[in-house]
Image 1 (tube, rainbow, N blue to C red):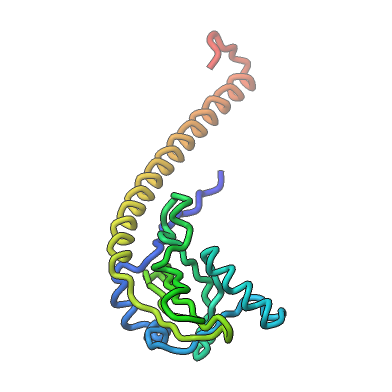
Image 2 (image 1 turned 60 degrees about the vertical axis):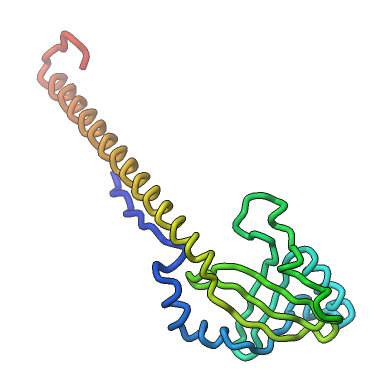
Length: 198
């Protein structure tokens, strides 16, 4: 029997997300408001890209890049991206707002980036397909995620204990089966008949 691989829990977020956000080089660069561009459908003519960009925003997603760092993000503008409710996957005025400024769309997206809960906020000109944006630390979601992380870790530890217990039970059954088989062979080779089957 092969030894079982040791399973390891991999958390979705850092234990101290705020420190990671404040000290990470990439986060420090992205917290400054800087130029962003829509990166979808680059091979298409500008007029088609303009239509597709607005359509994607209304559907609740778009590909955006920070020009200064080259950081590409596939943003979701869902009302609640972590919800299982299909209605929460749709964008709302708070996340996609075409009415705030004429010719621009104001966007907001919440997600986990490099183990830290963040909010992307910015606007994009609907004609030029560029604008400005930045990342902010998502305090509210980080507290929720820390609580969920503790629950997931406890559940994983419980499942690991159950798995180890099943492995020990299986190994013990294999050992007993091997001993019984060895006893049968020994009795056969010596000519001793078994009165009761083992």
